[in-house]
Image (cartoon, rainbow, N blue to C red):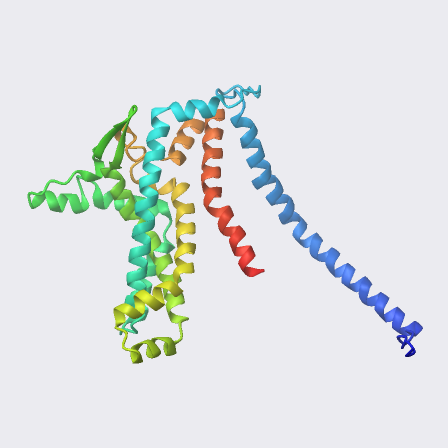
Length: 324
């Protein structure tokens, strides 16, 4: 048998140094925890605590100025899904989300490809495309409300040309298919809100796509050209599949914005006639702070939270798995 080689014994000084390092490391960990403790408490109280409180209120009978926290079950949720206004809100949110995301994706990708050609004045164009993102949705809503108002802006110019355009305030639903008590179709007035929202947020997708395009090595394109691929084939078969993860990220972020949209619509159109531009955020605000129906408002907020979580949580889980 070969003799076992035992590790050398640590001297007293080595043990003291190791113990000192451990104490220092523990002290650093404790100090780090102390620094982040206020943030943990703030998030715990003002985010998760208030979410839990809203969930509890949504199951109560508190629909007046006088608090009534007696348990009501899912009565408030049942009322909402039978309510004409909330049904219209869901319809508007669906079409706003679809057209908003499509507009941001298509315009962002086209403008990013345009900037990727290394054109002259690229810096100026980047600033023009990114500038709307520096504005708040309230400012954007006021600007586009003025531009699209029938008495001012673009519509006034069209009216002088004999082209009376009232689509901004239209209550028309296209194609207007009846589904129960609600018309199922695209509210024409929602198009105006989509234009304003896409104008502001397209710069984000431009930045994302441009970063992805610039990260693709030029050697890949040169190799494809040497193999006889056209520019269209290079983009369709090589570049677009490479930037597909960016597309997923943009979709998730834009869906999160569209599902909880409030300030843009409230500043631009409000709920609109027959609720053609109403969304759950506007309904929740008016129900809670103007009608004093706190339980109904809390139920709307929980529904909005769940719809956003349906998009965000799977994305976060897949991102964590990809990192690991």
